Figure 1: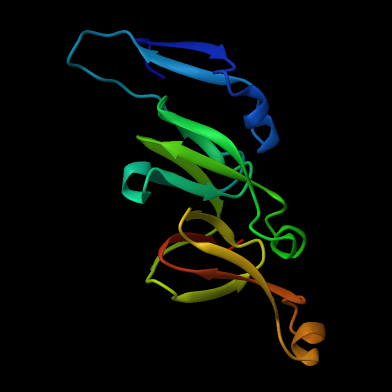
Figure 2: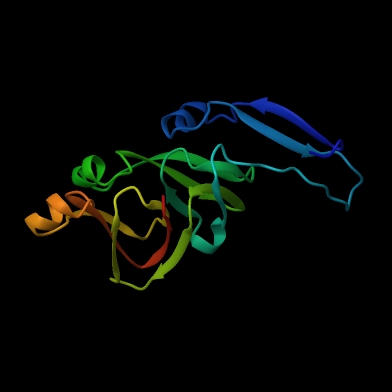
Length: 178
């Protein structure tokens, strides 16, 4: 962090909602105090080896849904809210849990992912079936459901488990490999 940046800690008025989504109740705010028309740097890093995905919310209808706990940093104009899985099956067997993280507003949100990240843009009614737990985030327009792996042999011997996550477009999805 530059010496021209000040750091302060607040709840940002969203403490409980942030806590419910796996984030800290507290926010750390960085303010640049240098001359007008200039800028400087603040650096962030996740707690694990992986990648940081910058998401400009205006490019995604101002609303993205992510796995809880993946938010690293965001613009002040981004609010964090609790999002619930679209079905009980998705909640219990989808790998992401019942509570997801809603990111709304304008500006950037930086989310973290483990391993390689794949970004896909799904057309209307286009479906992708992925391993549970691989979903990092998705546009709010994407439908999220759980399907069975299919075939007793696949369920018991493939190492993939009994359920997969089905994502149906339109919208953008981000997947992680670990």
